[in-house]
Image 1 (cartoon, helix red, strand yellow):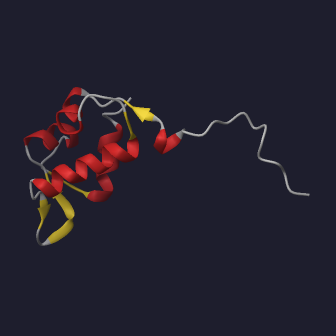
Image 2: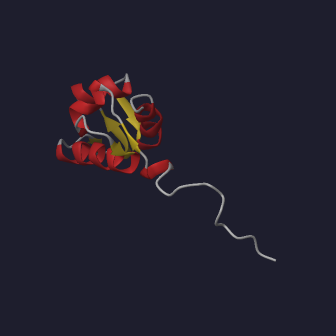
Length: 91
């Protein structure tokens, strides 16, 4: 018999869809309003593309501008490290 998923007490909208509040440093890029984590990542990528911050020789590497340095804590990071740094700026 298959278990019914109803009655688990879980609500939709958790995880990636749950709104998170950015820190003041991250808010300089994505805005100060609470957003789903997926939207935060999307806005950071918009900022990266708009300001041409990907290393042309290695597209996986992001060269931080002044705003991103405050979030990343360093001059460069890979796209895989980026989410770890973003997590520190979300509550």
